[in-house]
Amino acid sequence: MKRYLLPALGFLMSPGIVQATTPQVLSVKGTIKPAACSMSLPDGSALDFGSLSPQPIPGSTDVQYSKTAMAALKVQCAGPQRFVLAFRDATPERQLVSPKSALYLYGVDDRMVDGLVEVRVSGTADGQPVTFRANVTSLAQFDDPANPMRIGDSRGAYTTVEANLDLYVYSRVRDNGMRDALAFNTSMGVDLVYL
Amino acid sequence: MNKTLFALATTMALAASSTAHATSTATLKVAGRIAQPACAVSFQGSNTLSLGDLRTDSLNKEKPTRLKPAYATLAVSCSAAARYAFTVLDDAAGTVNPLAVPVADPGAQAVHGFGLGASTKEGRAVNTGAYVVSLADGIAGSVIVHSPMIQSKDGSSWEVASRLIPDGATKTAWTASRAEAGEPASVDQSFVLLTLNAAVIGTDALDAVSELALAGKITFELEYL
Image 1: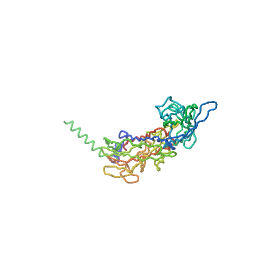
Image 2: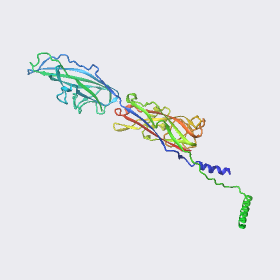
Image 3: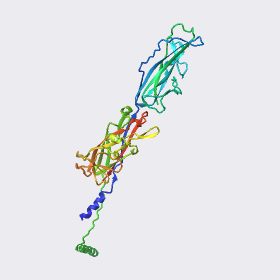
């Protein structure tokens, strides 16, 4: 009797694998965030052109003052980042035209000087020379969101960018327009814009 | 009345005859129904494990990075003792990055890998990483007993298990025995600590300028044995 009873009970107790409960879900979440960047002016935030000497303009009674100087700009990111540099006139109350490809010179008394400063950019990204282009040239465009300074190719993501800012100051005055030395100043801002 | 007495006498006579001519076989039909105990599966704490916010500068560029482990406790509670096992299914199985599996858990094999989701870089899909779920000793029954977890492909042959296999078929169970190949325990409650070890691939392979989401999902199904 026992021989036949056990198989019968076994069949009833093991009706096959049956799902016991509603499946439970364990979710795993996290986020990988881009590294942040910092920007610095290793040589300081002030650039003094010193004293500019007048240069004659052939065939003209005007004279010109010009000089170049260089400033370093470094962008350091914790990891590869894609970004552009947006140049702006940091003296907006003096802005006459926007956007523009140069900053205008002003005297210490806020009197406008017939002169300007152009900024051309070159440099490296992650140790390799790359192109810097705003629109189609390396000339910085100020207050021009459509034409920021692009670094390398459009997909380039860099950890370290070292930019050389070549500043060219130029002023032209009439020969008799300036008897005394005239101090001038201007300032610009550079914003790092993530793409 | 007389008819009734006659009929009863006939039945008894037949019974006596049957006993006198007993054969070597007999059949006893047994009917009944055993109700399955109601079991509930849950995770102690939250159903979501967080791997945190990771900055790309904290990750390797050219090789996978192992992340800090995360933990969850799987609990089963039944109305009566029962033998059960669970299977697991990786809802993101298509996103396992095989390079990340041995970094997530050096002792793991490809079959142990769970997906962490995919991202894109330059228009191409990239599997972000992988994770492996390790099993600590289980606790089976109301009497606290630490016992190995066991696994079986067919439900009859069991081996000690140390990691989940997300194939939707491998059964993982608690054993009440400390023996190497103990049978699944019949208990009313059980627990096991799950340790999730994850790794993400090198950031050179990822779109490091965008925020990437890590997204894995495991479905646990409990089965009676």
